[in-house]
Image (tube, rainbow, N blue to C red; front, side, top):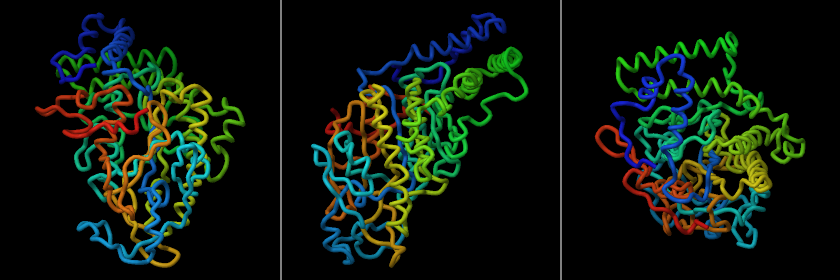
Length: 469
């Protein structure tokens, strides 16, 4: 893998266009360029995982109600926090609030999981739970951006774009990075964008699953006016003009990305509709994911599509649990809304794990269950509408699948769940660990832009070796 790839004077596509003699060979030039794009990428070392499925829980999952039990919180319920709260808080909070749910140990590992996840708890021995996550921003926008890109205020390439840049696309007819995300999610297109990386590295958002995936289609995937050979002729003319402009103006990574995206979109017209046709799945599989059931239909379709995508060679897939708002953002109505949210994702995630195992994809597929921050152990509001505030200082995420040591609980927060205090894991550490599992040394995956070398983990980050198998 190239570890230092600045924008060069002569691009690969420019060289191919000049050497392949123009319009009659445009299709060949595109093919050769795509082959070259894959040929100059390789892992730094043998990867444990070949693909990543990112399950994004938008809004802030409460750790002390899901994967990080706090008996002391129950003991002192209703009393003031016995130490100082952060000087900067997103909103005022009151006294301690115990979890409304019981925790039990599961699997041979005895991993603690709350009753919110009855089906996922059956896979306790597959999960590496990191209980000491922390990030740098208490607002959704900044925290979501940092989770996806490593930076909370600057536009940077997304994690998926870095992975695709480092490893290349394994399927010529499909994007290497696909996301299913509502338009209104905090961070918007930056969550799957490529920023200053080549534009072809950005993710393709196929939209809200309740709109797009349910209809087994990608918006505008078919050209309603021109098809077949006529469309290919039209595209060749457009590409010829793009390359002539490129010769006059010089290398432009945005134009390079546009040229590649046109070619990929043309090929996707054949591959994508078949891939997204869930009618090909058996009733047993649809039932396994909860497709058709009111609570689980949306996220169940996303998880099933994720399995279908990675099965066809898509390297990075993101499923987003959100209806457009920050779904897990329970400043109030914690009990009612966290129960609803968990019921929508518990069955689909458990089904995804079972299905990947059944199809021989488990050992080299990495799953990340992530949220932008956690919730405070102190209450917001009163009565039945009580909730929890944002907490970036200590929260939980988990990994599973390829290269992960299942049945692991890594790190700890304090006895109430406010601050990460033991084996603290920053977002940069998490990103370094994911890159490592995918065969990439995070310190060597570099891109020179604006006079300096950039990387996903900026100037920090350590691999969390304790969660590696």
